[in-house]
Amino acid sequence: MNSYNIAVIGGDGTGPEVVREAIKVLDAAARKFSIRLDYTHFDFGGDRYLRTREVLPDSAVAELRQFPAILLGAIGHPDVKPGILEKGILLRLRFELEQYINLRPVKLYDQRFCPLRDKGPQDIDFVVVRENNEGLYTGVGGFVFKGTPNEVAVQESVNTRRGIERCLRFAFDLARKRRGGAPWPGLKSDDVAAGRKAQLTLCGKTNVLTYAFDLWERAFHQIGQKNYPDIKRDYAHVDATTMWFVKNPEWFDVIVTDNLFGDIITDLGAMIQGGMGIAAGGNINPTGTSMFEPIGGSAPKYTGLGVINPLAAICAGQMMLDFLGETEAAGAIEKAVIRTVVEKIKSLAAGKMGYSTSQVGDLVAAAL
Image (cartoon, rainbow, N blue to C red):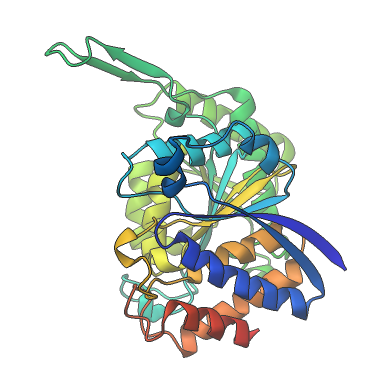
């Protein structure tokens, strides 16, 4: 029996509620597939900060590094100034645990929940690979004459050849795996059977950001030509990418981009796959500790009401199992989610599902 120690950060607002349902489904999968999951809970978040004025203890990163994976609910508290928790917990963990990939499957399970006309599950099934440790999110910059009429604010985008190359290689490998039949989220079995050529799209802004994306584009083509001749390479400006997400989402297979653009386009991706209630993501260190989370916020106005949609957190748990190598169990959870969405759920929006938060967790667990 394979055994895994999992760190759990319920976080703020509805975070603990959705994590509870994710664990319920994970435990059902563990029983079915003879896996042992041991959970260690951490109380990092807004309530702890308000109580102790400490965002993340100095020992936290070293302690979390001992776990192969972290399951996160949400970070964000209405009584804490925006940025304190996000930078002090989310960004710190992503950077110090070197989770240099943000992985976002964009997959539509039911046409009823897609806002795009005439688009179905066969059209919306791609993955965004976002560089997660560099770009504008490094915090390089500062103020001059702050608080005066002559104030100047500078924020710099940091892009290194090392950081770009490791992100590109992960994306190329993923594109190859999706077409080779490996059980990554978003795999289209009909594409594997048809032998469709894998495609990787670089999303950037080469016509304006002529330094950063010159480096991205050169590395993209050099690595692709030398090591991945079987992968079709494509390029799209970020503004065109958002347009084509709406007009022709079926054009995309795997997309790779920088930190800021990835943050933006994945929210649009969430909307075309049905909304934040179904959108999960992973912060990946391929050889270290990775963190999996629903990409929506803490939704404090719904806290304790039992109406928040837990499916994104459940899908985050599915991604976590996949990362750990438990691909059969991960695939079973995804099938259970699809069955629940198609057969039971009235809406993916909070309070409109037709079931409570815990009941949705029960439905997915039962579907396993």
